[in-house]
Length: 351
Image (cartoon, rainbow, N blue to C red; front, side):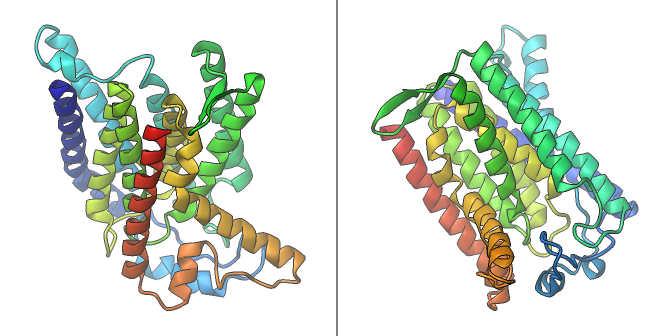
């Protein structure tokens, strides 16, 4: 047990310092190549004008680069292979105990993290090189959703065919056998959590929220004896904290698609690996609320003759439009996210 605790804390701290170390190089590249959106948001997702969003997200004036998520997944990838290489070189030393790259626990979430990150990186690059009215160019939402669907389909097949998982645990009830229905459930969860990635809209907001979510799953995995998975989740937290160090106001860069796509898709995998996916809507409650607010806004405007439920969507921008300073929105989201994470963790552990 003590060595497992050391393993988690040491790898997490390593990821943080690796993230801090690579940031100057990334920052220099992003600013030198002007990797930011060249136009502000002008249209909402339904094609109507978005004057409030345009005012809140004046990208032309801020000139803040995207691709900050590279700090997160880059530090995770480097940390994983650092400890793997040390374990390979010194197999009889204590370093062998700290490697957490394992086939049954970390291969799938790591693959998902990197695959989604690279695809998101393509979108970010196109956004920075194009000038569009809605999202500043980049891959269309349909293309991004298609990729997430295919990634989810592959992950669901791996769980079902390779890991033999076809049930989910219902807290305080027990396991429910789903058979082939497990596959569409997995896909629904991954797409749903991915849609919550739009929480990346205020300096420091997404970093704090994702840090508490992955911390919750690190605790759940550790309690279940999935030490490698706990280490992976906590290493992600270390990378997020390094990113957050530079993302607090005024942000040096934004998380953007390469970060949010990587985090949301790998989070889904981690939730299923711990068999605690049904508490994910609680732990990641703010992601769900953020996605739901945008969906509610779109449906309301379409079927209620343009009437809106929120001043602007997603939800965190609604609070800004009400006059809340961005730092107040961010700090309160952090607090709520921690509370949700604690509640979800308690339910997962005792249920």
